[in-house]
Length: 393
Ligand code: C6P
Image (cartoon, rainbow, N blue to C red; front, side, top):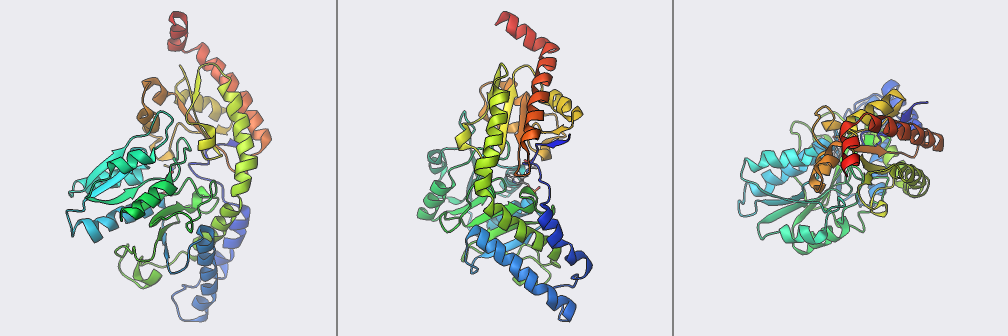
């Protein structure tokens, strides 16, 4: 049996989405900007897909959803767009507040912008991997133009106080961006209730295809054009539209929004079963109270066992997990979120992320519990540091 527990890295495409995309590779391949029949006949499908996205986020179509190639692009676009639109023109408004555990698509972009005079404050997480709205509020100055805070963290699953921070930002007339990549389909992302100016999402995190994402932009908060050179998307991001993937993302987003209850019952129960079993192994720490986390995620640390060693034991048994985010998996550096949580440096090297989806089965969870428990015993029996700490401690 193969078990996939790395759904925060990417998800399998929902078979319904695959079926829906198929005709756009074969018969309906016209360029939607062409005036002939081939072009005209795909337009209603595009409009329908866009409508599904507006409905799923519960936003009016006077707002914009820009189609991008991925969440990394959306995050780059919003931060660099704000630089060009506001900061470059008014250096008195050059301050951006974010959290220290944003995805590198935010952190690296902020680092790049800091070389152009942008002043960045990164707010740290608490010992649970959470962010306090108060800490964000305290970081704001009269120079702050933007707060960028993810809706849920990709490593711990911790849900951040988006509603409160968004309301605060509105009151202070500060722009608010949230990277909602890990929240979509797991919590209700209803923008009629949460006052967000910009929101990032990526189809492959909610059972859509890879290589397509979106950036929601509230009316009145328009950014400079992301790509110049054509009339597509009203000129805001030029380039021929990837109709098949847009149609796939529309359906995937509708499905994800419709499956939030299932994620918070069926998937949460499976996650809790796995978490109860793994945390009954001696000397384990799970980051964050489970009710404050997305229902599919566990970040667990087993004292004395390197995350990579556990990963390979699981991999040999056909179980896919990760030591943290996929884009940092080739560096053997400590898990950055665990490092931010601080306290004990060993935690950062022993972290393992297990993330489920609505396609995960109970049999897969049972198999994972069995393999994980045996692997923990085996690896501890050969871990000299663990044996030593146990003897002296
Ligand atoms: N996180 C993970 O293993 P792309 O690949 O560009 O569609 O998504 C980037 C991204 C942006 N924001 C958040 C919160 C994310 O989790 C990710 C992707 C993966 O955690 C791969 S690094």
